[in-house]
Amino acid sequence: MQAGTIAGLVPIAGFLIRQSIEADVVPRVLIAMGLSLFAYIATAWMIPLMTPLHIKADLFGMDLNKRGTPTGEVKIPEALGIVPGTIYIMVLCLLHLGNNDGLYTAALASVTFMILLGFADDVLDLKWRYKMVLPFFASLPLVVNYNGSTSVRLPVPGGSILGVPVPSVVDLGILYHIYMSMLSTFCSNAINILAGLNGLEAGQAFIIACFVLIHNALRLTGGYWGALEDARAVQRNLLVSIDIILPFIGVCGGLLKHNWHPSNVFVGDTFCYFAGMTFAMAAILGNYSKTLLLFFIPQLINFLYSVPQLIGIVPCPRHRLPRLNTETRKLEPIRSKLLFFIPQLINFLYSVPQLIGIVPCPRHRLPRYVAIPHERLESRY
Image (cartoon, rainbow, N blue to C red):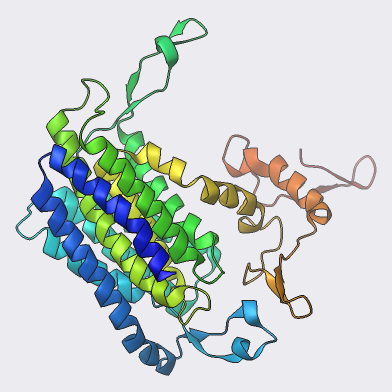
């Protein structure tokens, strides 16, 4: 797996160097690439040193995908995402020594905050309703300090819809800040939800990061899309995004070395939250927050598919994982009998207007007893 990963990164690195030569930013990109290589080596080296400490602290679990086999009884250390997260923060600090950009500092604070919250989740084993809101609080440092563009370009052909003129650029104002917070929440939880198989969390993050890097390299030498953005400002933002993504690829590669099947460590919620927040911060600072969602299409589909379980309409098992069939030696999906929960789904949809305040919601949503003219229960509605 490692040989294939390195072989796949070679053309990406070559393309990035070629683009940086054209953009006249070679020294900065080479420094980032060198520190990213250091991040890979440090992560791969540190994880084996930390595994005994995690097991000693009872931060371990069993591989449920191997239950019923001898390897299913082996203790595997959890929450090892704290190692790549810590090394990543150290590398980012080295990359931006002397940088007084408050926006970059706020983004770094958000990623750090998210790593700490993720590790707290791994230790305290928080419920899903709390996990869903943690990224919102972690994104506050960037959302509060963000002073960049809040305009978005609409994909309107010809500047009109059905003959009605529509502006091509819209300033969202405060709504853009809300969108940034929602993007951080979605990215973090999307990776956390699509998980459970050896190497899946780190693998999907590694692939998304590589495509994000290619996207940044493509835009580095052109394609500034109109007079709304200044070319120098766009290039500066993209370089910050590259600085954020390159070390992340490094730590992901080091983590995959130990997390690939058969996994020796579990990444935990720490890595999932850390990865999602990193993508959100890179996209926001690089001004491609809408494009980032295209790289999250599989995660978006899985997120929408999981909504009935996340909001409680369909029972959500503690571990949303496939199960190993010891006879066939294959993983089989768990199944929820959705038809049995159609009444709950109908009641939920019927109650939405009250839940969001469009229709008044009484203190007790119960039928009432009417004694006159006939004793019977009547609906309150």
